[in-house]
Image 1: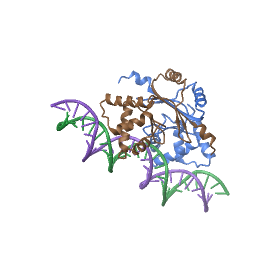
Image 2: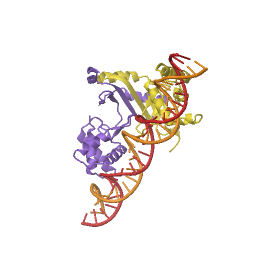
Image 3: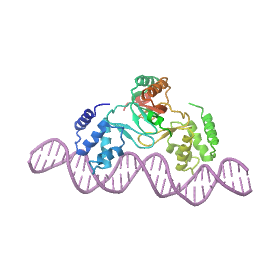
Length: 147
Length: 147
DNA sequence: TGTTAACTGATAACTATTATCATTTATATA
DNA sequence: TATATAAATGATAATAGTTATCAGTTAACA
């Protein structure tokens, strides 16, 4: 995991570089994205900020996440059921392991992914720009609990 | 690609085995899913069927796709923008290569994916049940066209 | 052929997201 | 430091994809 403070600085700097204003609301959103604890959804970000920033609008969270996505500083993880989740700590594509019971998301370190990408490019003659890799399963905690 | 006729038979049989009725509407939907040409969306399936089955309801398509998913005979591909797409020709999880220009979806053959899954299980101590792997890029056709 | 549980089709409800717009504010400049 | 202005906020309406509801219909069985 990258240092959340450094990620915060980088994201803010990137926003300044692109001429966007730094508002208190924006700072609060970037602070949460810089850590991205548990890969939060927009709803989660909104809930967390509302605790000490009660006027924060959900629309503002959406607009800021979209903005930060547009400068490449947050990774969007879409799921079939709708709710997108975000990772501003590690915005480059990387694999995820998702527990289907407790919904926890873990980042594994995989060596052989680069090799796989080369294999794909070779076989399909695509110019590969990005990828998305999720494994779904049951985490060790949820396995030991019966049910 | 599996033989669409065989896939059709298998899906219908699986529905019978589970005690579901075989209606004309269901047959038409299964027929399209058995081929899954271009990984169609619900909307696409509905449009295709309406040509010679004008009373077909969108709700019926949704309900049938959900039903066939529940017996494991169609793979659902969810995307961040909402619209899910389906593959009833090859319902087990498999990688996709998606052209971001023409939206074409190609199925590559990859050798090293099983190995990757073992690596993940080892490292995270998850019991891995399924996965989702998409590569995004530009296909050779779209590369040669300028723009 | 009749019975019945399942299915269909029309539409309402729902959820996540995006658009709109009046008001407010961060920033650049005088 | 005061001011001008483009951008941001917050409240809410609109939208898109999907799911729920329910009255009427039908496939599959005896």
